[in-house]
Length: 258
Image 1 (cartoon, rainbow, N blue to C red):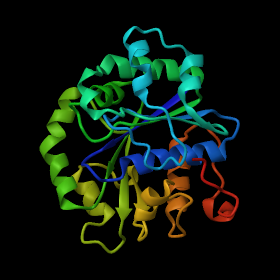
Image 2 (tube, one colour):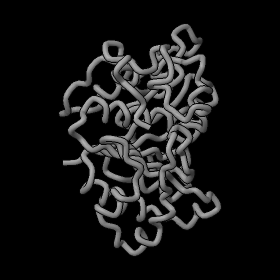
Image 3 (tube, helix red, strand yellow):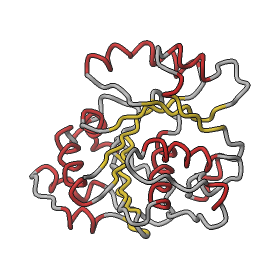
């Protein structure tokens, strides 16, 4: 049975794409027998961390609308490197309003027939059809945030909206985490009225801009502990799946998949 992991940013620029793609990479690296799919369902192309060109979801729009897309066709449209598959989001952002939530749900249904693990980036907006369709899907949801007051305040203002929509996270990813920040993880958990154990921290990386320049995730692009944190989170959210090997023990053997 396939497993779905949907990632949603509490605010813009909190690293939702980086986190979700890095976790997809980690899952694919740790479980080579599993076929892993990364989907951008956020109203943007979101292929900044892909060295080779990944096809856009735009090429499948008519097939999604007509509900004619099949598993083999979906696989064929994905960029594949070993057991990791990538389908980019909307290339022409002016067309995003033409994508309905039902199309995202149908795409995820088809993906579940073709892949073992599906990681979807739903961005940070609720007014995008693909994003809302992904968030509404029966899946493991994770909210991505930072220690910035703007992110925490935005959540507090919009929390009732998420509750009315029935969109609740299974856990949180506290990205760009700084240990001695004035807002430590315990404080953030209290602001969210959630248990501290539900917050997975990914430490701040000084050279984060290299990822966009080199079109690679930080998972293999830094020695600042990012890969270790990603591996720990991937292990924690895999549930029934095997525990992944520690990143620091295999750092030299782990290469970027894309």
